[in-house]
Length: 70
Image (cartoon, rainbow, N blue to C red; front, side):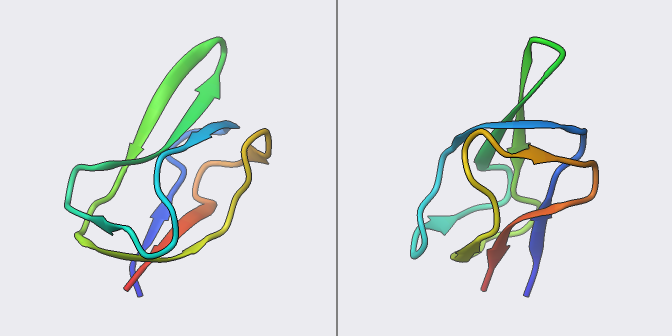
């Protein structure tokens, strides 16, 4: 199961997907806020969202899994 990971340390500003959504490579799944900048986190692979491992407002570290795709 591919995981979409945070590429920076920051706060989850917005979750752009829901469980069951189909995403393609390059689709934005989460937007992180760091140092007053919004950074999109994109899927590296296509798939269906099976789990969302974060919540809006949650602090995350670089490398943390945010979304799991099937």
